[in-house]
Image (cartoon, rainbow, N blue to C red; front, side, top):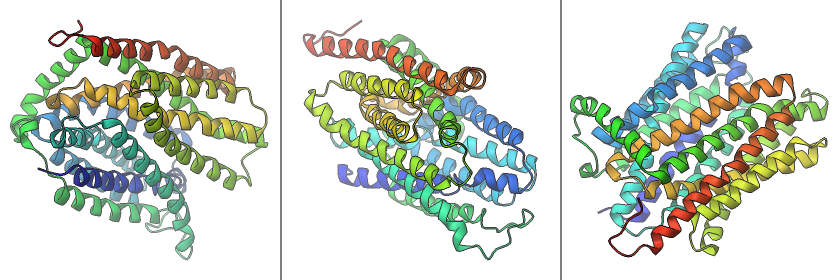
Length: 428
């Protein structure tokens, strides 16, 4: 049997490599596309198609991971993303970028929930009484560290290759070199996943791809049935949608909002880099705070979520009213601290309700709920931001988070009632 330390080290290494490779080209990919002839409308179409691909495949691919095993679905996912990485390097037309973005979306959908489910199941197999919250909080910290490091390093790589041609017709340019380094890291990621992840096949399905595809529809139906019949899962999915809506409002509008506060973005690139880097650090702080707060509240994770989710919503509302950059940055970071604080207790509550054999598909359903919230926020709050103000959009996002506290309160009540139930009795 694998030790808990081995499981944690393996998972933390893999997610760190995954998010490091993801972040390296993140800050410059749109600039690379523009250098190769894309306009912003085409960029918007690419992002929309990418998100739509994930939404369409999110749950079926989660079911596939439950059917044939999480490790090999993750391997296929990482392979798809690596190939998409190379396709982007050689993309010089809108159609080529589209193909790369679609394949990247397929890979992201396949990867969603696969190794996350392996991690939880492996921990519980090693110790059925393991407390998931600290482990999930550490995972979030490693992911955010990798994102922050990747964004910082990826922005600096072009400076090392300034001797390369800057013409958009060249394959290797300063802007494209982060893709090269990202691809190399993805090769290491693939090797680590194949060599280090040891999966207990008794927790998953047939192990046969052909049979696995046949089992997917039944697994999806089981997952949606479980979601519908389990009130706690329904409540948590509702909270996930609210969080997705609020998060997209922050990610979509913070740059134009701060540009307005500064009187423009020209000459302020360092400021934007500090704000972005600080948001990753703030998320790490929130992840770390979640563990002592959970212990202080006797592991009443629903109550922990209420505290952090409520503070997140209030921070966004106050952010909407700011007219000075300094205070706005502090509130922006405060929002990310509390967002980070919600993640691990929320994940602990959700994983408690999910049977091992449905874990990947159920985590994919939860991810789908977040994407639905994001799509609602993109459309609705985008309209509000354009025709009313960014502040109004943020106030709506913050109020949605505050209203979602009712969902976590109901979860906390149900958990408390369950703990008081005599042995042999369950909640209806």
